[in-house]
Length: 245
Figure (cartoon, helix red, strand yellow):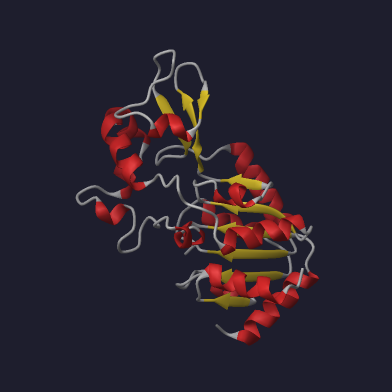
């Protein structure tokens, strides 16, 4: 890891008072949750079906049992724990440096690490609701049964996650864009910025510093003041050892 860049990053954090963290699947891979599209990722293990087909609204409605078979095996990781990245981001918030987390992940690990202001663009697997009466259920309801989970009223339970063909929640979008537009520093981590419309939200940033931490290049690298092609957990663990906040 480039220690000079790390020192510059530490200085940016020390001087910032309104940081927003924008994260993707790479934030949680170090917690044992595979990303969606890389070799060996979630979708590469389901030959013959595209990502859009597997986790689309239409597939959920017409192949609900098959959806849940895949969903339980490939998208639920109840034993996963927050890693150094989740913990450092939460620490930034606790110290008054970070104002919001905007995440594309659905695992709830930011909240598990202690983050409070979290905008979940694609929902959360720990929230599930009855499509008939609206009653909410935790993840245990999904894990404790085989086949399609049903509400006490008999209705089908659906994960509160945004499937393909579904729109993002308007209030979440507004909150995320508002936070990004007011930030003085935007840290982008664990995302290649290829999922839209989420990736377009960084265009609302008008602050001073952009820092990108991702193992591969992104379209926003040219805008970044600093760019790390390292594991995000390692970068934040190194920052934590510097004890700058």
